[in-house]
Image 1 (cartoon, helix red, strand yellow):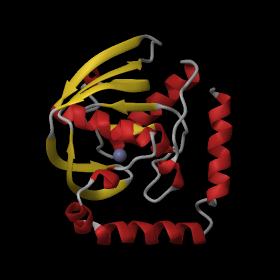
Image 2 (cartoon, protein in one colour):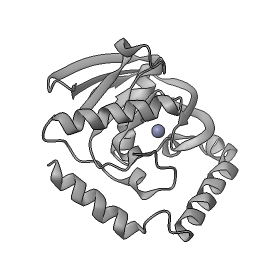
Image 3 (cartoon, protein in one colour):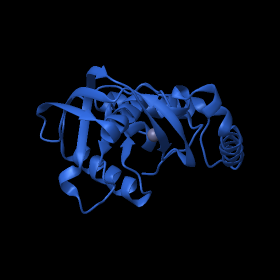
Image 4 (cartoon, helix red, strand yellow):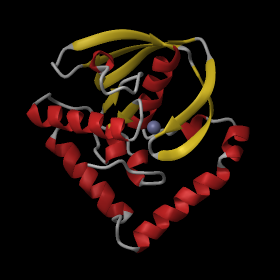
Length: 193
Ligand code: ZN
């Protein structure tokens, strides 16, 4: 398992609901947490690791020792959003790129946890920001889509560099073509539908 970087097509994939929680899913979640901590992130979505599922993990502290702050969201739905906040935001699929993004300050989310129980929670501030960022990923929406034209302009060069890097890796045969990526995601999706 590895984190895919912009503009990998998996990041634009609309993830599909998971039908069950089992040992394999628990092991996927475990590996996602490990990758997230290794890259000093606070959240990671399934399509960021090239998996087509409505699943993301979060630890707002970013501290692997703070296991009490680890959260798993399976088939999440945002029920309510309110308020407004603007802050610098980053994404593990856009290494070293940070820019301001405006989002609601408070969200209420319902999701299944790893025990298969439905849980409703309210979050605010940084955690609400991270929840919305990861939730967007599941719909194929990226933080660059939420930026003001000015913020987007400020990172234009870095985005162009990521696009060049991706094209280079493709030419070297390190990344399959769009059709192969889509076919693999659909196959994985059917395994867990
Ligand atoms: Zn992200």
